[in-house]
Image (cartoon, rainbow over all chains, first blue to last red; front, top):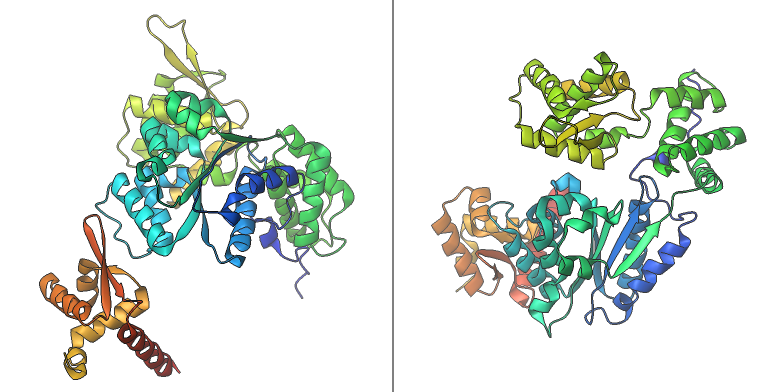
Length: 391
Length: 90
């Protein structure tokens, strides 16, 4: 007879699950409700723009999605045709036209996918919203990817949309989610000023806060009395050292549960957590690696192999480029240009996977140095090799 | 136009079923889905529009057709198709 699982509902530990209650984010949730309160009273009269910032695992996405679901229920109860549309910009390569295509598909799923510029799609989206007398909050998650790809003009287009149609009902509000405001520095002053009207900064979780989050999830996802108190305590401790990353904590909890099940155990023990932590790549989530493009993965694989073989802490971009070329050869891919690789290095650095620094001691000009500060190269190599082979 | 003339065409019935199932669609998408050339499809659509069953919306360079929500004929046709399909499923 098979051993009974410690899980009651492991979906409650899924990265995409948004709980009904977000511990220690109540204040920010109320603030969002205040910012968008007008939507419930006079939706046509104004729009709003809010930025949410915070480190990895501080609950930015969960906060926005919880708020989105709550305000949708409230607005619909009042007979307001309101939709909350949450888009991860990195999934759409930061391209405005792909993002707008997705938003438009919410209302017109059969609208042709090809041949329309971002401007045309934006006009169409507004026209459709007018027809449906609908209002939306468009949440652009990983907004850095959007800024990087599209720059000031697209941000300006999105934020100043209403000024082009004065006197008409206002339809599109915006929430932008990013790690910090550093990436907005590249924007023009006017785009930046319209974007940064309201800012919500999420602080890193402290240990007791992580414990509360984990206790909530334990109650939802596990059978009663299967998770010892010291397990939650240990995971909170580990997550604090991972800069208060709640996503890391929840993934670790799930993984520890899996180890308990695999060992036919009646409950999750600290030993399960230790096994789980040794199997997990610190700092970087598998989901983050999975969201990378093929050549970003190949480039990172080159970096991992370089550091696996080398004792040095830093590599020049050209050293890494040579390792990447070998990886490309192995997988039958045409290597990308030097400039493209530089861009990959910047992206991976923004994701916290790599660290890039500009070395000025080079004979001439400035050269980029790459390091892999927090991930064991062999773990990364194993993970990426498997991911590339699976494609 | 008399009712038997509107409904006697197989392509027109296919168009109506398609729009009932998928909502708003553009001309070339309809043509592709019912396996008919663009201009013939366009003629059928114009006829259905003239009868007040479908309406077209223009979004920049694109025309999309859907049921005319304000027309009793359109509502009746939509209901007919819906009931028909439901009964056939049972």
